[in-house]
Image (cartoon, rainbow over the protein chains, first blue to last red):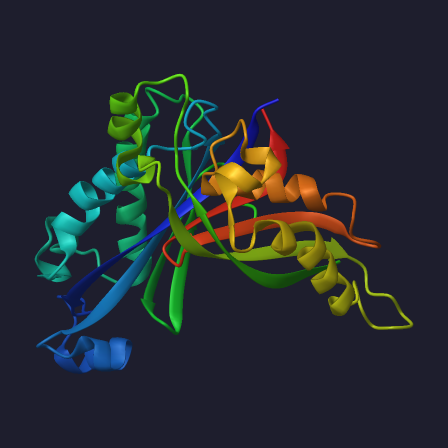
Length: 151
Length: 137
C-alpha cells in the first residue's frame, strides 16, 4: 500500500503587462480594463504555486525529484517570463490578453508538458493544479487533472 | 459539512539517506539534504478535519481539544527532536515532507472525536509543502 501524496512548490517571477484589445480605441480599452489599460504597462510580482500528486517513491520518500521539478519550472516558466513584458511573449502578442486567467492557462500547459517528461520515471506522477497569485489580493487556480482537485 | 483547520508548529532536524545506496549515490540524489550531520527546519502543520456542527456548542470540534491532540500526538514527539534518530516512524523511512505528512496522518487518524480527518498539510518552508488525504495506491 503505497501512500499517494500531493507536493507543492511556490515560484516567483516579476513581469509587466498591459491589458488591451488592439481593435478597440484607447477610450474603449480604458473603459474595459481601467488602470490595467495604461499604454505604458505596469508590473506585478507573481507567485506561481505548482501542485503535483503521485505515489511516494519508497527509495527516496518523494513524490517527485524536487531538483527536476525546479528545473522544469525554471526552464519553462521563470526563464521565459521573469523580468519581461508579457505582451512581448509570442503567446500574448496576438488576440490573447495577458490577464492572469490566460497566463495561468499557458503556465499550466508548459508545466504539464514538462512534468509529463519527468513521468517517464514515475508514470503516476501528474500535475494537479497551478495557482497564480498576481498580487496578495488576487489568485487564480487552474485544475489540471480530470477530477476536481482536493482542497 | 464544515472543514476546520488548526495549525501547529515544530522545529526539527533531519537528513535524507537511503541505506541501500553508497554515500556518493545519496549525495547525487539528495544533494545538501544528504549531509549526515543533519540540518533543520521550522515546520508548520495544518490539520483539516471535516464534520457537522454540534447544535448545542456550535462547534465541529472543540479547538482546545484539537490543539491538545496535536500537541500530544505530534508536537511533543517531533518538536526539538532529530527526526531520523528520535522519532520511531523514521527509523526505516526517509523523513521527507511527504513521509512526515503520511506519518502525522497515521498518528491522528481516528483520534479526533466527532470529525473525520480530511487533510494533513506540512510546510517544510513557506515555498515547499506536502498534503496527504489518506490515499493509497
